Image (cartoon, rainbow, N blue to C red; front, side, top):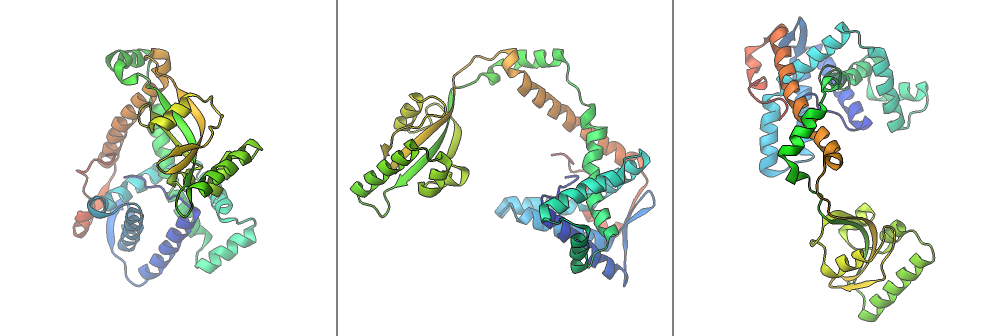
Length: 335
């Protein structure tokens, strides 16, 4: 779970605010929970990180999955922070242009937040009670580790033609391309309409499409299916998984063509064929890119484990015994 990536500028600002508030508390009393080559990690930093991670996990999971994720995150919280600190130190040792990284991250933050001038940025920081140094530290902490992992692990991964060929020979059947359809749909529901009114609506939508109305706009305007939140798109769907009447209509269309209204149990469907993939026997050529991606990811995962293990073995790390529950290095860091 190293490093966890912040997904929005708003979250970054929230984290920086937490760091600033934590610093204020640290002025009163502070406790060292770990040292990494002499650089300390404090209790307030650990507690702030715990809040961030718990909020992040809680926003996307529920039930037993949430409980398991919370337990794992808490047990590796300090371990992740130690790895993160080592990577930051390595970046400085190896001469990574930290100022350039900061400027790029800052520019992205400003674009996402709609901040156009230095004065506007200064106002945001003042309103949040932050300093530029605190902003810089946080942006680096959430960008540099990933950069270092790419430089020291991912970018060194290579796959030979022989490895690709050997993998294909052993797993040939798994690369067979099955027939599938990708469609976009407008679903006109019977709810609140008589049969005649629904038929009239279907005819009106068809007429608008024929007169040049954009399909995705008509989806938003008329469709009542959950797919409307994705511009009506469905698929790829394997042959046989679509309703038979819809699949038959899709087979008769060319990519980009739109069907007439189809009477279905839901009401009326109007579909546009996006793609019809015909079945293909696997060949090395049409399987190569998928094999490359799979082999590179497998190698990356293995090398990343070795890299993390080396980091922990070759750096001077001291952990306060009172916080051992946050430093469980037996948990696979890349699972």
